[in-house]
Image (cartoon, rainbow, N blue to C red; front, side, top):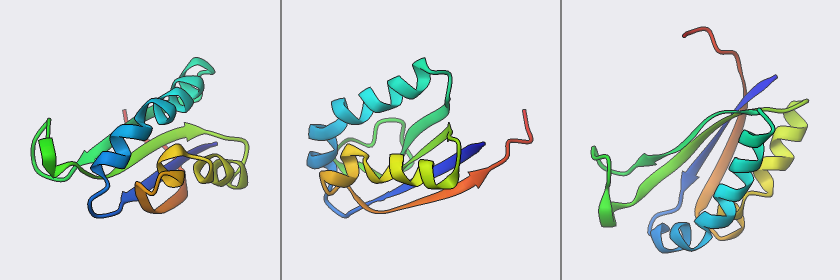
Length: 99
């Protein structure tokens, strides 16, 4: 089943985000390579493709896992969470309707 993982950044987390980004991306690339990643990306903190020093307000990942528990375990091991980028992470079952 597909799950949406929504991470909400802590205020002032841009430096921690940038430092832990390679490890975060490596995990996403592993999901992609296994055919289990639907989409992933950050939420810019301002209405801009490149928010610069404004940074990001969070991230969205939609990926396939065997269960909600597995998705939650995967989210709990995210380098962004360990580095203090995320203030909280929510995992929800997701059913794509379109396209």
